[in-house]
Length: 385
Ligand code: GLA
Image (cartoon, rainbow, N blue to C red; front, side, top):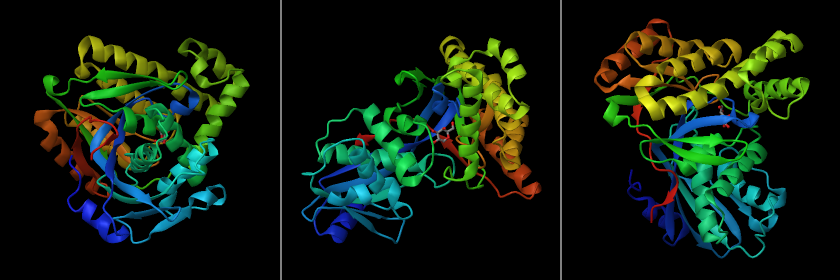
């Protein structure tokens, strides 16, 4: 995807000078590994081809100012006053990145003001990490313009800090890592304990398969209660089982865990422990047999999220079941849950028929008609100009 036409001109008409550069970062879908990141486990997301762009340049008024082609409100914060900044609405995802840098100990006292103009094709609230795309694009721009020399992993943590502290969503680091480390036709295996990333080839084209994202149109927000309550259940489970993180448990230890935990906490724990194992099995299956071999793992992941972690919704279950009946290799809820999107691995020659079937099934049940797009695993954040 190329820089949106007219972005530099709009920047110039807003701020009086052209931008010195344009940076971009993609949204993400997660192939498998859900609610495992904050349990120090494994995730396997990929960057999608929808991106968020950030045109940026310095100003001499000591302000970080942000505008967006999609929003009427414009926001700013004095760099000298980041400590006490309060962020309104969407601006926290952009200005919150500077706040995060400040709270993580980066000295911004002599940093010049920066003007930002945002444009994006990542749909909002669809479970495709529009927020991480925005944070990562802004983090890339500030890193270059303020000459901070942070690594991509450090930038991912800055984005996560913005999300946790400026927005108040207690999320893990998966989305920012996917947005920063994505590669064409690859997924990103992240071990959230060591923060080691490995690019995992998907070979979709060679396998005659496509990845679809089925947006249920059920909006979700991770600053709401459901995400946080799942996280608390995981932390409670780890505490009661005497391990630092659920990552430290194996599937073989689940029987014993069941005798120690209440039923609900046990099912939350079982999801995370089995999901971590499924991520590793998926990586093996991709390497040995290719994407056609991971369908059962995707389906098992969906069932675990639906029954044990209880984060699916009827709209997403319908999309997954209909996609399977129409010939998908595998399908599952992707992202934090409580709405958002499903991801489906589909023989390319069935994409159209399957998409029609899912739209029909959803509307017959009185649900919103899902928006369905083919997503191509894409390159992560970069400077475009
Ligand atoms: C959201 C969060 C991620 C991750 C997923 C669930 O996308 O931002 O950190 O926890 O939910 O896997």
